[in-house]
Image 1 (cartoon, rainbow, N blue to C red):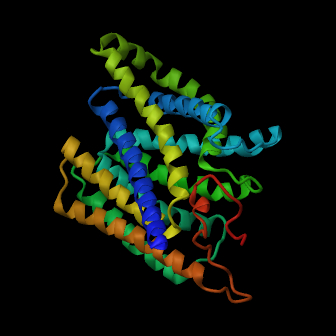
Image 2: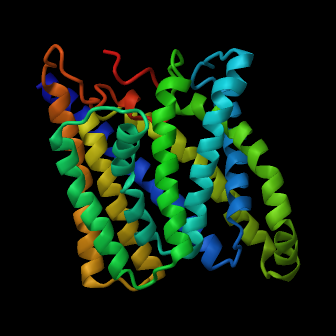
Image 3: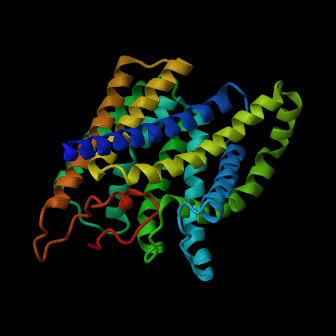
Length: 341
C-alpha cells in the first residue's frame, strides 16, 4: 500500500513536471509569434536581447538571492575561453529561432527544429569523425523524409524563415557537440548555464540589435497604440523564457531519459496544435502527415539510441555515442563528455 502511494506520488510529479514544461515552452513560442504578428513588433534581435536580459536577472535572483541552486564556480580564463564561445553559439541559436518565427508559422518552424537529431549525427560524422551504427542512420530516414514532405507542402513557405530555422538546427547541434569539449570538467545545470551564458549573449547581441533595429524600434514606440500593454507582453515573454529554463531543471529531476525524449516530441505536437488554434495558419493534409512522420521519426531515433546504449560494447569496435544515462546529460549545455561512463 505504501509502495503504491509512493509510485502514485512519483507519477503525479512526473506528469506535473512535463505539463509545466510544455506550458512554458508553448507559451513562449506563441507569445513570440504574437509579438511579431499581432503587435507588429518585427524585431527578432531586440526580442532575443530582452529574453537574455530577463534570463540574466532571473538566474542571478535564483542563485544569488533565493539560493535555489549553488553557484558553480568557473575560472575567469575559462569564462572567456570556454563560456564565451558557447554563449556565441547559444545566442545565434536563439536569434535564428526568433527570426524564423517572424517569417514562418509556428507549426512549420517546430517541425524543422525536429531536424536537429539528423544535423547532430551528420556533423559528428563529418567533422568529428564519430562512428554510428546503421540503425542510427536508418532512424534518421523518417525525420528527413518528414521534413521534406512538410517543406514541399507548406502553404505559408518563406525561404528566409526556412533557412533561419534550418541554420538554427545546425547551431543547436554545434552547441550540443561543443559542450562536450568546451565544458569538459564543469557539470552545469540549466540555471547555472543561463547564469553564465545569458550575460555574454546580451553583450554579443546588444550592439547588433541597436544598429540594425534601433531606429525601427523607436518608430514603433512612437506609432504603435497601447504601448504599455504591448511592452508588458514583450517583457513577460522574456520572464517566461527564463521560467522555461527553470522548468527544464525541474523536469530533468522528475523523469527518465526515455520519457523526456517522448515528452519532447509530444511537446512539439502540442505547440503545433495550439498555434493552429490561435493563428489559424493553413495546414494541408500532406503537411500534417509530414509533421507526424517527422515527430514519429524523432521518437524512433530516441528509442534506437536508448536500445543501443543498453548493449555492452564489443572490445575493438568503435562505440556509437550512447543515449545519456541520466537526464542531466540531455541538457544541451551541461556535462562531461558523452563517452565517459
